[in-house]
Amino acid sequence: MKRILVVCLGNICRSPAAEAVLTVKARERGIDAYFDSAGTIAAHAGAAPDIRMQRAAEKRGYDLSQIRARRIELGDYYGFDIFLAMDLQNQSDALAMAPPDRKCDIRLLLDFADCDPREAPDPYYGGAEGFETVLDLIERASDRFLDYLEDESG
Image (tube, rainbow, N blue to C red; front, side, top):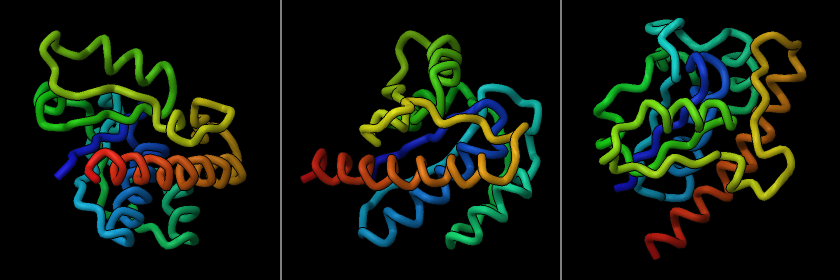
C-alpha cells in the first residue's frame, strides 16, 4: 500500500481538501493507498479545516469534518512514500525540514495535472471562488496522480 502525505502551509485549506479528494477517488477506483495531510507550520495544529473549504468540498461530495491540522513530523519522512506539496514554497520548506536519509519523494501535486499553474493558490485570504478554483485543480491533479499510482503498481 502506498502512503501519501499532502502538504500545504497550515493544513487547513488545500492539503485537507486534497487528502479527502484523493481518498474518495482512490476508493472509487479500488486503489490501495493511504492519504493524510500536514502543514509546514503548526499555527493551526488541532484545528478543523477552514469552514469555507469544508463547505466547498461538501458540495462536491468530500467530507473534511474529521480532519485536524497538524505539522509535518520527522516520522513522516520515513512513514510516507510520497509528499505532494501544494506550492513551491511548501515543497521547499518540506525539503529543508527533511532528514538527509528520508525515504519519501517530495513533489508538487499539480505536476501531475499537466497544467498551468504548477502551484495551487492558497485561497485563505480570498473569496469563495478561490476555494472552487483550488478544488478544480486538486480534482484534476488527483485523477492524474491516481493514474500514476496505477501505472507504477501495474
